[in-house]
Image 1 (cartoon, rainbow, N blue to C red):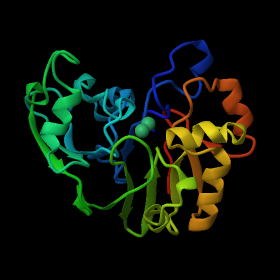
Image 2: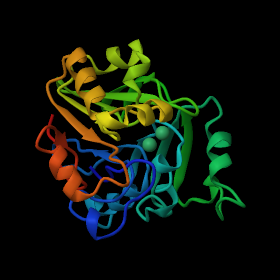
Image 3: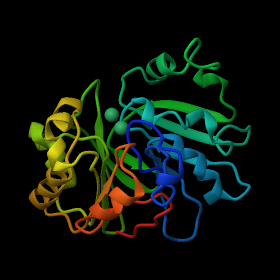
Length: 253
Ligand SMILES: [Zn+2]
Ligand SMILES: [Zn+2]
């Protein structure tokens, strides 16, 4: 887990143990090779270099959606932004480069995506084999534009990643995507007492996430996309009831 925070980074001494970077997951191949598949590109993406040593990234990034907390790391990871990098970036848009350029161009940002170093391709998300993994994507309920859930499978092991998902909206595609997975990384941004806010922003409460995981028959639920106000101490309390993602965690499905 390279970033486990939702909405905006959470710097400061109250957030050091669980980490303050926004959503990013490196999928490790399990054979000691460098990671070549990354899910989301929040500020946690900056930590990818630590997994690559001095090497450039050669691989693919699958974005669930284009909200800031899922893309802001893109121009800030030196392993991606160098002449010998090779990056396939998958976005939920029929015009991926044009859509990304809307959030990444002056006056919002100094450079456009084609200003990144290396060989970048901007591709429309689809269910397919990516970097040796079977990747399935499906549109799920959230707010503000198309949002995908992602399921990754290889060698009989499966992970579903739904960092921004409103189970209260009753999305059948999300349930199909997560059905029976070994590991579900799910939106746990709000507490049950914050249900109205979760619904309004298209997110989940921890209770929503648990009910969704039970409905899908997942083997293990890990909550992620923590609210930027959720301190380490508050997450410790949550961790008595749930498994809670921490930046730097290596989760084996
Ligand atoms: Zn988010
Ligand atoms: Zn979002």
